[in-house]
Image (cartoon, rainbow, N blue to C red; front, side, top):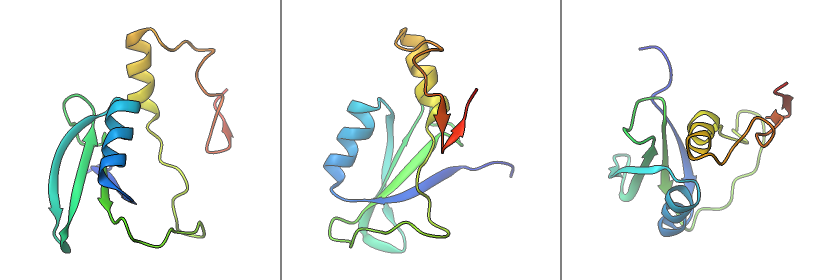
Length: 109
């Protein structure tokens, strides 16, 4: 299977996570399941309007987890560039000049 189906991260309060990703970023809440390795924890899925593989970002809400620290092997950013840029372009809210000129400290020029 080529490509990535989804990326998973850990978050705090599920209500804050839901509000940020749906109301602020405008992603679609695709589904809620349980974390099969920890059935007492939800697994929250967000994606594009259809939920296409490769557009999915998921979270395990562990409210009382100790905050992580960046280091070797740890993701510092997750790019939602394509979905968010397409949404802004369709709504007329983005132009080539309003889009970021760098991502992950790399020039997009």
